[in-house]
Image (cartoon, rainbow, N blue to C red; front, side):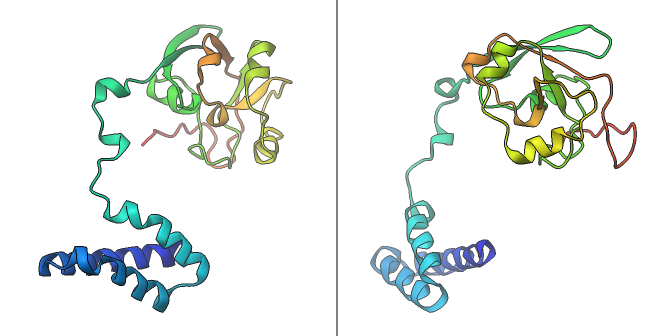
Amino acid sequence: MLSRISRLGARLLREARTETIAGNLHSSRGSLYQAHVSRHSTSLVSSTVFSLRNRLFSTATSSGDQDESSQEKEKITVTFVNKDGSEQTISVPVGMSMLEAAHENDIELEGACEGSLACSTCHVIVMDVNYYNKLEEPTDEENDMLDLAFGLTETSRLGCQVIAKPELDGLRLALPAATRNFAVDGYVPKPH
């Protein structure tokens, strides 16, 4: 269904460009939607298209276009304890996963599936149970992957599912001694 909506959106944009060139966009915008929605969609798709209508033809700037200084992200401090016991403390923007933060700071946290919940190679151990209790409950999918993790503990989580938030400032994460990568043993993927 998503591809059908995408095709419909692309077609609407092409025709809207044609209408804009002809100078008729403002007068025919509503009828353009009505004609396409009635011809090419189900009721579910039509409600989705109507909810997207303002986004497709909006002239207002999106929140992502605002001044960068007003969007400066709050950061928290996270300490990774490496396999050899050495520690590396980094600043992590609120909203970023620990897997992404580790990759950005050259910390050896594998993440073979790149955060898609299809492996356990980003397994981390939350060193303080108080911080562990501040995390959201793991989903069934995360628990399924954690069952495959090497060195599982009571405070184990997947780094891709631990998202930085202000109450996690000071979080300490231990990297397990090994990971189980069923694809290629010893391979460490480079983040995109």
